[in-house]
Image 1 (cartoon, one colour):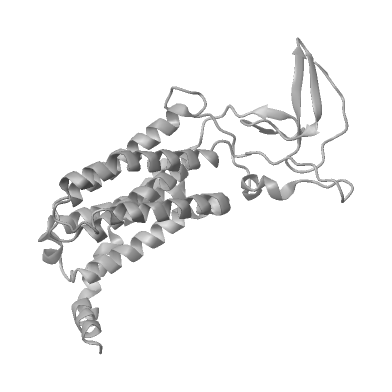
Image 2 (image 1 turned 120 degrees about the horizontal axis):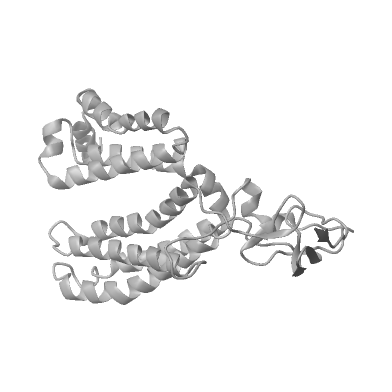
Length: 311
């Protein structure tokens, strides 16, 4: 095979784009930025992203997809009040919005029209921050080679958030206006207002810390799920199994946290060796059981009552 010989590319992410191919002859352009959907290989040639995402990549995308849904549910519960009958419908609507947004995002991604995406393999943390690795051969002129080396794991999250926001603005106000009769006029739309704040925060978080989140999200899930479960059980004054079983809502919260525990464990282990990693899921109920066995020593109800009395 005849290849056009040119000087080697400088920089970690600069590459040469294929301009012409005729049989065994390939002609490449000058060293520069790779087109979208391509990244450089070891020989500094831009190659299309044709691989399928790994399990860990899907788990990362699932984590980023869960963030707005969990925040939706939290603020809906926070602003709905105990007597409001609209909370359940809003929870279902938020789930519907995020599900439709996720499916739509997959359908509009390359290849278009199928629930499948092609991607480039994540090799190192710097793959997420190619803008920091633009070379300056003469220390004066900068060769700009910024591109999405982790295609499409970086930009697909922004597309998903945009669809979530659009669907929320189309569906939620109508639903809240129809069924949120138990709330005052000023409280009906507070969960929507909260989303208008946390979506920009999530967008900035992905833009700045996407690479860090990619490597840290399993541990973030485990730590936050453990902390929130302990806070919820203590705030609800759950000190034994009967207190846990007396209300269905408490069981739903418990099982939800167990799912998050399992998600974090699978993300950490990556299920590389199925027969060795699956037994780790037996650890999922351990934090709740530990709390129930030790609650009688800490008496969370007494601590809460003393805190309320200002002692």
